[in-house]
Structure formats: structure tokens, C-alpha cells
Image (cartoon, rainbow, N blue to C red):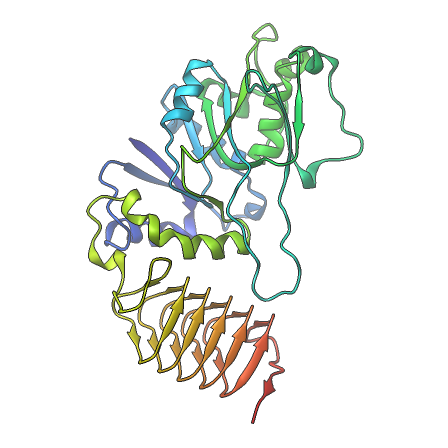
Amino acid sequence: MECLLIVPKTKSAFVNKLLSDGSLPSLDQLIVTILSFDDEEEGAEEFGTADVLLQNLDKLKKKNVLIVSGDLITDLTLEEMLKFHENENSVLTCLLTDSPLSGAIPGTNERPKKYRDFVMFSPETNQLLYLIDEDDFGDDEKFPASLFKSSPHIQTSAKYKDIHLYAIKRDALNSLKNSKLSFSSLKADFISNLIYGQFSKSKRRSLGFNEQQKYKCFAYFGNSNDCSFLAQCNNLGAYFEANKIIKKFLPKLCDNLDSKFLGKQTNQSQSESWIAENTQIGTKFQLKRSVISEGCIIGDNVKIDNCLILSDVKILDGANIKNSIILNNSQIGEQVNISMCIITPKQKIPKKAKINSSIICEEKEMNLNICE
């Protein structure tokens, strides 16, 4: 299978190294070609997926294109979705799920935001009639009358999430260059217009299609038969949970995993935890549903519960850390208590500090409750 991996130019060398130096499990069945866009040119911060696709349109040679967002982490089996896309002769097939991975966000007391999409579809055929992110939905939304004539029944829902995985006919992407409209965001600009074009001759004309050329878009609803988990890691809560859950699914995702990807084995149960092989752990160490990366040093009587510990972190004796993210090269002092926090790189947390629901970074003065 061929894969075009589009990355910012400033990250291209780093991604190339990851793919070639054994840092990742083998991708033998995938032919990966790295393409880049200049993220340092003026206005690059406004680049959307549609902009980047337009720049690389000539490199997309197949009849159908599978577009996968870089923040998607899943063990999804694509076979059934792609078969559905072909059987329905769909111009666009969008994967929707009602159970994306999510979780509480360390560093805040706020309840995690529920990211939602407003969706309209035919329950008989799964034809996709309307799709918009909650943040883009306005009070003046208008729907063409022909939309309501398209299906005997229309289901409207806000429980499904579009996780930015699309199967799309290559010819439809020509609209990115032929359309009278301007596209930057793939979902908000291009896909919303493509879906609308099912019911409007004038919209098809503005997209650069023959106005008599009718087509259909469909939703494919991911379920437990297709995958064990779906995480769109465009928010910290989902990223946090995905890091903790991925370990148990690695053997399913990759055959013949090198032992370094399976992690250090300890005497305690690690069914939902992972420790890098070169990390040192002390005595009476307690670990629950956490990930500890390379080069860490963990002292005696340390408790780590529901945490993500990145590389080269030192945690001294008696520390108790819950529901937190500790970033690279930080040092956690003896008998420190940390809960629902993010500790940014190279921080030093003093002995017996108690920190709750905080983000500790270089620019922020640390106001800590020290217990004598």
C-alpha cells in the first residue's frame, strides 16, 4: 500500500529519522513517501488541509484517496469501510463514531469539552446529508428543500463525531483547483460544500462539476467489529488517554514486535501500563494504568497512577503522582504529591510539595503548599 505522508517542512527530517532508525515498529507493508509544505512562509499558520492537498494534487494518482488526519490513533480495520465506499459508488465516505476516546484534562478543574458534530443522514442508506462542527454551526443555517426530498426519513444527531478519516474519489479533489469557491479547511470548506452539492445544481456548478452530474456522499459508522479504540488526539484529554491505552493493542497492530516496544517486565501486573526497558525503578514501586518513557529513574516507594511520564524524568523516593503528565527532563522531589497536573520540561519540584490541578512551567511562578 502506498502512503503519502504530508508534514511541515521544519519537521520533515525528524519524521524521516523516526521512520528509518527503528524508533517505530516496522511498516514493511506500507510504502511511505514523505512530502512537505513550507510552514515558515508568510501565512503558513493559516494553511488548512485543503491548501496542502491542492499543493500535492498531481501526486495523487489512484482512483480513490484515503485521507487520514495526523492526530488519529486507532486499530481500525479499513476493509469494510472501503468496501462500502466502492459498493455505494460514493464520492465521499466519512467515518463517524459515537465513542471516540476522551478523558479529563490535567492542569485544570474544568470539565472536558465534548467535541460534537451535527449530522443529518438517511437511516436506510447512510447517505450523508449534512455535517458540520458544533463550533461552525450558526443560527442562520439554511437547508435546501431538495435535501428533505432526498430521503423518506432523515435522522438528525449530535452524538456522532467525525474523526477526519475520509475515502474520496480522486476526481472530486479536482474541485480544489477548478472550483469558483476558495477552500482552506478540508472539512469546514470543501467537504461541507461537496455534501451540499448533492442537492444543488448551482453548488455543483460552483464546485467545477457538471451540474447534471449527480452524486452521493455517505457516512460509515465505526463499531466494535471494526476497532477497539478510536482517538482523535486534537485535544489533551484524548492524547492523554491514547498514550495510556495503546500499549495493550501494539501486538495486534504490528506482527513480530521488537521487545523494546513491549517494555520492561516487572513483578506487578502491567496489563494497562508500560515502562521503557532502560528506565530504572526502585523498590516497593506501585504503578497503575500509566506510561513511563525512556531513561527515567524512579525511586523507592513511588506511586504512579493514571499518568504519562516522558523521557529522562527523575522521581525521588516517596512521591505520589496521579492523573498527570510529566514532561521530559523534569525532577520530582521526595514525598511530593501531584494530582491532575502538567509539569512542563526541565522543571524541578521541591521536596514535599503538594500541587493540584496546575500547569507548572518556566514562565509561571510556582505557588506551592509545602508540608513540613
